[in-house]
Length: 241
Image 1 (cartoon, rainbow, N blue to C red):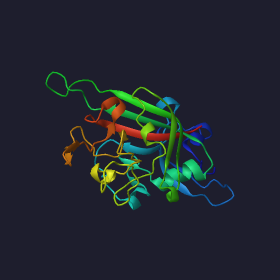
Image 2 (spheres, one colour):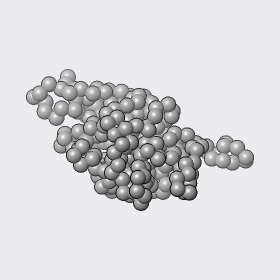
Image 3 (cartoon, rainbow, N blue to C red):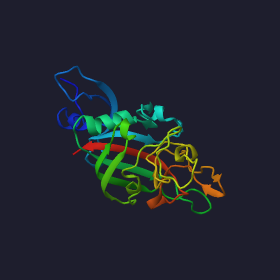
Image 4 (cartoon, helix red, strand yellow):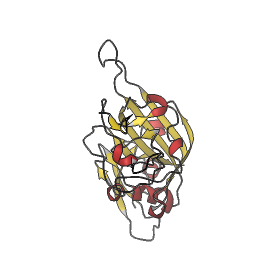
């Protein structure tokens, strides 16, 4: 059989219903040689068929990287992962396919009874549309059509260009201030972020004092967790619509 073009095809045509790493062909022209890449498919959550673009789970992969690094894949398909801006652009634009986005998150245990023994919280945000423009547009984000139980933290980042160390495309309020360098991760910043899934990993992240302003460089989803609380698990994934 030829390589499938998506996790959806793996599920629907090849009847693979187990989550894991699979090879797909990202060359949309079946008359040409395949361009094969390994991806992680979540075949369980919300009906399955999701292709993972980003995951934060162990904190053993640094996301404090340069623009050129963010263009490419880094991390581990089974662990902390970034699939790369070029890949995101290719599958959401060049292949002529439409995708929805889902972001799943789990909080660290709550502080109760003088200890972090409270329950973990599970949240998600889902978007009907998701695409990433090409490098000449600085990988501009297009995302919309929210539903979910942790609030819409991505709306502020819609139509933003990607910023990473050494390349500033954010709309910050300060001169000589690069959101990516201060918050330790590239993102579609807009002075600076309501969502930031590439920040420093951890339950407790040291504060940064910048011009007498206390900043928090952790992973954030402000519409539910605020700026001081950081999720212990994040997974950002897309599915064909």
